[in-house]
Length: 269
Image 1 (cartoon, rainbow, N blue to C red):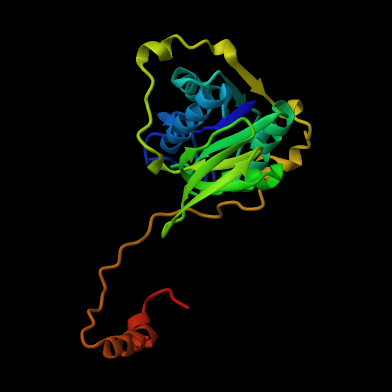
Image 2 (image 1 turned 30 degrees about the horizontal axis):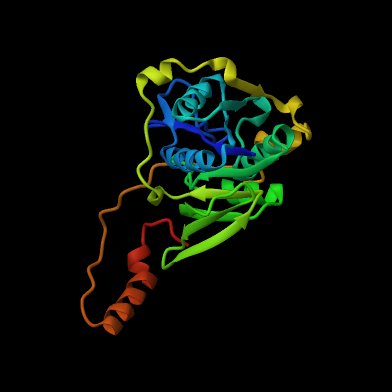
């Protein structure tokens, strides 16, 4: 039985520049760390590994420097790592990223039982990659997992936080899940264990290693959505304070928002 845990190297600062031409983050020359939500995914995957004696592989997409988060994952207890690295994968949006990850799972881990993801990343915050991977892989998906029970080599019991209620599900393998931070406090690797990690246990996968190696399906070429423009919001001190009952306030609000006086000199349609 094989478990895949998807992790990501993200900027450790909010001061990240954006390429004005492509609209993607400029990641070179900035400090990075493992996406915090992925620590919860690793912790849950390790619990499943302990119950099933599964082989646990961490995968990430990025440049050579992303080996650092794979070594961190192995220091926590993952058996090995896979770095997905090719210039053809650069600039991928959520759809292209999920397709790339799913292609790797299909190409190198055909016997995978479970794919585990953090609920989202701190640099994108879309929370869509796990669900889209499941769609590409044609596997069931359960999001916001905060607990497991009845773990076997053929199925797993999951508790999912659906906001207004907790839902218990029993899911047969193969499946994809994303893990909430409510699952509990994850461990952090010691410096000693991290320093002992063997980089030879990290396999590098390029476009040519995949079953589908059409470059138009990956990176910017395979991304139907792209950031057109990023800019700092402007601050306008002009404001209107409205008093009165709910009806009076709403009537006044509509009057203010539709008046020529309010919009005079402003770039509003």
